[in-house]
Length: 241
Image (cartoon, rainbow, N blue to C red; front, top):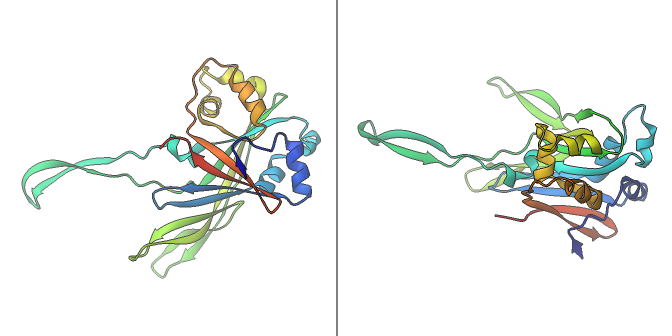
């Protein structure tokens, strides 16, 4: 049975499921034959709470909620069409306008915001590991490892083939006061979370925070949660097409 309200009501609940090895993943399918991302919830928990010098984070005492934002929320980032002109008859004739549909790309990292009780501004980046690969014609950069497993779809002449790859994990931190006061005050990060953010942990607390602003939201995604053989998994779904 699936539900849209996250059963992860706090980081303490997340910690309990992590200890029981019951944290699965949040799966994100990027449309237009682009590929998919999987956010391992255990990796997210260990990364969020692994800030040196802040032991209260280990049991989640200072974390209000954790939200997904950024390019993984693909409906918030429409791909612009490319416009130009060309000759009507090859190299001859008058120039006529044409439009080429833009191509969506697989995100290079996954953006997560941690909203906390106390004042704290920092960010943590767990970058994907990259190596130089010799193709015989030169070196190209290849992603070989990272915290977020991904699959990039490539066209092979007879259809799209999935190629396993990796993405990084980018975590930003705001206190409740910083988040709320930043809405409408030029803090683009807080405004992005307010307008489009999708809670992974602490959904009720997040809704109470955004309700403090009179500004309208434009939420286009939700996470559908399910218990699969005792393991908690989520699937990002569109609310609007």
